[in-house]
Image 1 (cartoon, helix red, strand yellow):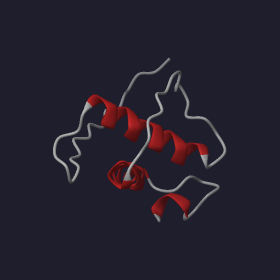
Image 2 (cartoon, rainbow, N blue to C red):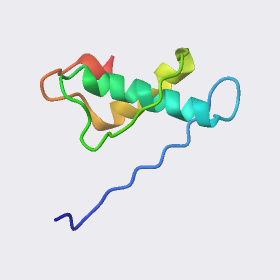
Image 3 (spheres, rainbow, N blue to C red):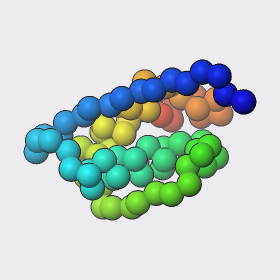
Image 4 (cartoon, rainbow, N blue to C red):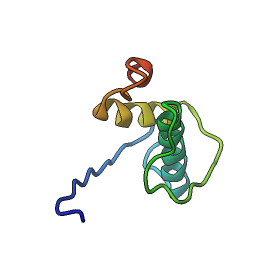
Length: 80
């Protein structure tokens, strides 16, 4: 059973201003896409909403993933 938890809170902004709920879902989907490139669906990811992404969504997702470092079997893929 889990005893500890880590909570990371992200408050990104885009060039067009505050993010909307659709922006948050789109960034989530982009993060899952980056994780999935390492070969595994994220643990406990039970649903996802897909929306058309733009450069801001992809940039924010990459910045968030850079915080955690590359996947073990993809050393440089997430850092680009």
